[in-house]
Length: 475
Image (cartoon, rainbow, N blue to C red):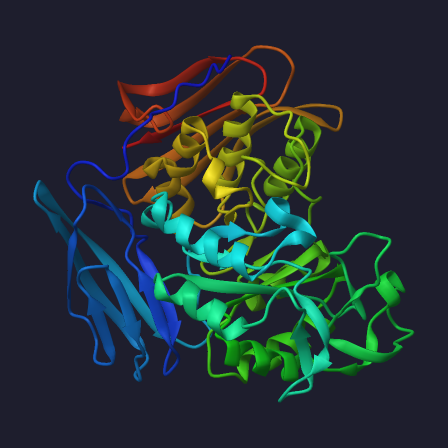
């Protein structure tokens, strides 16, 4: 039985509600594609004031496209209207250099959902379902293809070509883009990527030739013939917007070679280095990557959720606007990767960990089989708003109670503006705990998961069941 109270609501009913973050970034002269997230009864009509030269708005679908030649900050005012009313919000459009994903990525990834059975049809269907379910209207804007798309080297750039399950990569990404969404891809500097059953041969990565003796021999090692730029050019021609670059241990040399290749293309790329982005290079990741990962693969059990929490706790003070620690894909929904044994409270806990610590949020399950509870978790606008708020990237530890090396409870605060903050109280232990956060002044307290006001006080105090979380906003 779930203990945590959460709000359920209809995404396609009522007055429009804009769910835009405060800032959106793109490079000067490179393509912009932004689907304005807004819930409410359809049809909704969109308007944007101060749209810079080079951009156009599809006012019926709320999709902004084009490019902006001049660097700068453009203050946009966005309005969404329907028969029941309207909503307006400000968006700072930052046009600079390599400044995509100023807020954490939100989207869907193929891996846990489909593993090595993924194909062109399933990717197109995921894009359709992200829109049909209303998840795109909540800010989920990426469809990311993980490993097992790779075939052999060839083509115009002598780059990795897709296998027979992906007959038209450009057409597939065009389909994703037609919804106003963006599309990602997976690769590695290894000679052989992860992503196929052990009984089958490996998948090619972005290096070839003899293994370089300076690197570990995992997956055949890293080859001496580097093809990062060639592959980046091929992905750009297909219309890719994001790269998950996967090897272990991650280090700046191979990360840098791929980054140089991506920057030479005519597109913006979000860039995630995974799976073990070594902490000793923290300053490099926070400067070069839109996200990085140094944690175990997500898996639907409580032990893994605690490990992911520990990673979020470690990196919470090392993030910057546009540069975030990735806690891997969500443990929610029907997945091929593993059976989920989490309780509903533990699922809320795992989502809260990503949301509060500003991790990217990637769904990785069958979108046509989501339950009402799972949709309520994925679409809570007040929790998502905390994740997308980068007034203070990361979080601030207030209190952490340990039993040796095992964390029992944790209280963290996250400034949201000059006069508001969010506070998360986590009980990781197997026992009921009483947790208290004291504010410097009397504040309005709101339960973000329940979407319910709790009154005014200078203290937040909860008796918390095992494996639960409470998130409140104070104003």
